[in-house]
Image 1 (cartoon, rainbow, N blue to C red):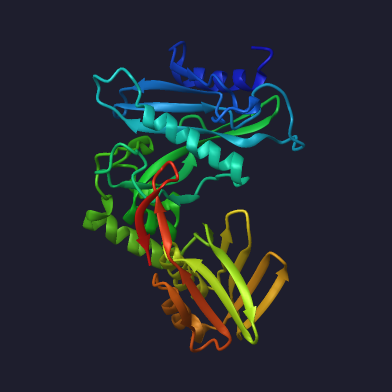
Image 2 (image 1 turned 90 degrees about the vertical axis):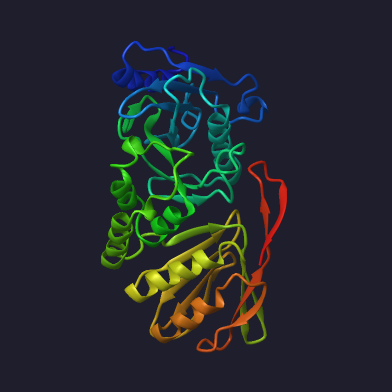
Amino acid sequence: MTEAPGWAAIDDALSRVYGDTEPLHFGTVHKWALGGPDPLDGISAYPRTDPVPHWHFVSYGMSELYSKESSDPDESGWGFEFTFRVARDPAETTPPAWAMNFLQNLGRYVFQSGRWFEPGHTMNANGPIAANRTDSAIRALTFTVDPELGEISTPHGKVQFLQVVGLTIEEYEAARQWESGALLGLLEPRTPLHVTDLDRGSLLADPAIAAAVRAGTERDGSAGGALYVSVASWAVEGDTTVLTFGALPAPAIARAVAARLPRGEDVIVSEDGGSTIAFLPHERFAVEPMDEDSLTIGVPPGAIDDLVAALRPEAGRHSVPSLPGLVIEIEPSIMRDPHGEPTGEVIG
C-alpha cells in the first residue's frame, strides 16, 4: 500500500497483535474528502475470545492515511485513530452496526467542530450510546490509550490508538469528580481491556468500588477542569455580568466548581465553537474579559457555596449573594437523540 503509507502503518500495528488474522473490514463508499457523510474511510472489526468475548474495532481516517496534508510534522492528522471494544456473544459472527455508526458519529463531531479527543476526556451521550438499546445504562463515555495498540510512528507523524470506553452516568460523574484514568484502573478487573458491555449496570453499586472512588476523589481532587457545553455565554447589563448556561450541564459545572476551586484549581467552561468562561480561585471577586471570546471570574473562598447553589438546573436567573454583580442564567436544555433530533424531553 505504497499509496497509503498511513493505512499500512495501522495494518502493521495490528499485525503485531493479530498476526495474519484477517479482520472483517467495512469501507466507506462515499468518502468525506469527496463530500460524503462519513469521515472514517474504513473500520476493521476483530472477533476476540480473550480475555472476554468482544469485538475490537479500529478506525481508519482520523489520521493521514494517504499523504501529508497538515502542517504539524509530529502528528498525523488529528493524531489518533479510534478503537472500541464491545462485548459479544461467542456465537456472534457479525459485528454490531451500531458500534460502527457510533464511531462515525464521533469522527463527524471532530471534523465538524474542530475539537479532538484525548485520553481522560469524558462525554455524556445524553442517552444510550447504542440507539437501539434504550434499556442500556451505558450512556456516557471516556477515552484511554488502547492497552494493546498504544501509539505508533508513521511516515506522516505519530498516531495514538484512542479507545472509546462506555460508562454509566454514575461512573461518568465519578470520572468527572475524580480522574478518568484512575477510575478505569479501578474498574479494569471487572472490565478487562476496558470492554464496553451494554448489558451491565453501574459498577459503583459495589460498595467496595464506591468507597475506593470516594477515597480517591478526596485524596486527589478532580482532574476534570475543562467542560465543553452547548451554551456558555455572557453579557454585561449595567454593573451586572450575566453568565448563561444550559440546564443539562449546570450540575456538572457546579460539581467541578465545588471540587476544584477549594483546591486552588481552575474550572474552564467552553461553548462548542464559541466562548470560554473560566472560574479561578482568587482572594477577591473579579470579572475580567481576556478577549472578545474569553472571560475569567475570580471567586473568593467564601463565595464558592453560593456560586454552586446558583448553578442549579432550573430555568431562570439566579443571583449569587456573596458575588454582587454576578447573575447565573439557566436556559432549558432540549434533549436530542443520537441523530440530533429533539426527543420532546426538556431539562429545566
